Length: 324
Image 1 (cartoon, rainbow, N blue to C red):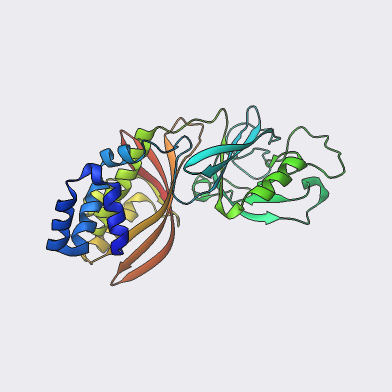
Image 2 (image 1 turned 45 degrees about the horizontal axis):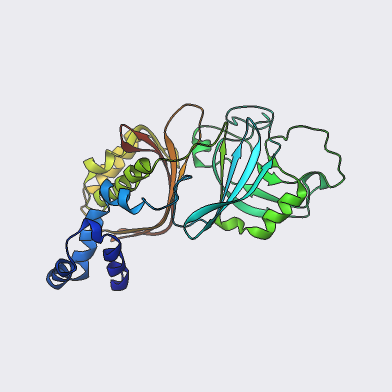
C-alpha cells in the first residue's frame, strides 16, 4: 500500500485510534508496514464500520464500485433506477413493468419466472426482433448461486415493448419489460458496466447498517486469518453447506485448505472495490452477495481479479455459502 493511501486511511479512522503523534511514533518504529497492520486491525472491528457507515446512504447495501442500481419487484411489478451522486442514491426512474407470470424463484428454463436475486448487466443489445423494443440489457442469470442451486435458463433481459405496438401478453417469459421511451431515457443515463439489478418478490427491503458493519468486519477478519494461515479461524466463516464454484463441497474444501495453509507461506492480500448487496430469497434467509477486487501474492500462487461470495448472516456472523 502506498504511503499516501495509508495516511488517508489514518485520517478516516482517527476516531478509533490515538493521537496523530502516536501514529507518527508508530510509523517511526515500524514504518508503513506497522501503520498498515494497525489499520488492518481496526478494520476488523464492528465499531469502526458502524462509525464509518453512519453518514452513508446504505439503504440498498454498501458499494465502493457501483454507480447505477436497478431495483425490481415482481408482485406489483415495478422497476426503479437509482444513481449514486455524492454518496446518496437518487431515484431517477420508477415505472410499472411487465415480468414473468410465475411467482417465486426461477428454477428451470421455460418456467416463465423472473429470477429473484442479484445480477450484473453484461451487455447492451440492439438490432433485436422488434418484439423487444429498441434495445435490451442482458443479465448474468444464472449467476453462481443460481447455478449451484441447479437453476437453469438463460436470456433474462431488461427490454422494451414491441415496436409495432402489438403487446397482447400481460407477462413476459421471465424478462423485465418497460415502455420504450423510459428504456431509451435509461440508456442515455447509465453505463451498464457500472450497474447492478436486484430483484425482489415483494417490496424491497432496506439494509441495516449494523448488518453491514458485521459483514465488513468479518470480511477483514476472514482475510486476516487467510493471510496468517490461521486455518481454524478461516474455516469458521464457511457454512457446512458451502459449495465452491467448481462444485467442491465443504469437507473436501476443508481438507484442501488445511493442506495449503500448513505450508505457512507468506502472503500479501489486498481487497478493493467492495460491494455488498442484499440477496432476496423466499426462504427468509439473511443472504448477501459480496464482490471485490482481490490482489493475492504468495510464492506458489498469484491472482488479481474479481472475487464473489454469497453469504448468510447467521447468529451475527458471516457464513460463506458459495465462492468464486
